[in-house]
Image (tube, rainbow, N blue to C red; front, side):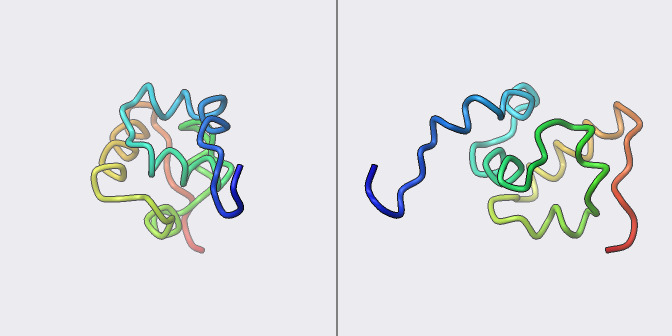
Length: 79
């Protein structure tokens, strides 16, 4: 693999939960890079931190918030 390129196939092994709920690849990669591998992991971060992740757009935020509401999970409050 050339220097500076990322092996995208490595994400396929760990982003299944995000694929299931319909997130686009950039958002899935951002979550995996942040060590957030399933919906329940989102309780570890604030909404502001999630929005700040590179690759996390408004549609991904809407999907994630909706999934969290379904599961009665809340974002971390504060920083």
